[in-house]
Length: 152
Image (cartoon, rainbow, N blue to C red; front, top):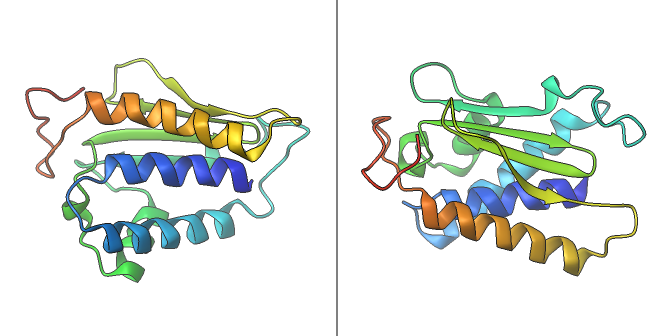
């Protein structure tokens, strides 16, 4: 679970564009802790699809957002709207794989994939490569209206 949470945290750091580095670090630390607590007892490496819906992280600016993201905001003192997250974001965190979709109708993409033999350095390189692609293709504002260069 640690590798997958590291991939989520790295991706969130790339998506959170409107905060100081120290605030991003505290927010992502609190998010990782909240997700780890939530996933305990719902993590099945031998059957990754089991509990999949429970481990979905969802942001939707027009309705409620993920409680763990809101908890991390509260615990870190960061205003949710100040994160600058995409108006619609879905992350699937499964044993061995983290996937993401930005927008409602866009295709999902692989953030990181891990095998039993992957080492941590390889895992980190994979997450960095994927999040660079996200960072280069996304720019959003809190109102839920994507900028002209954003993905919807």
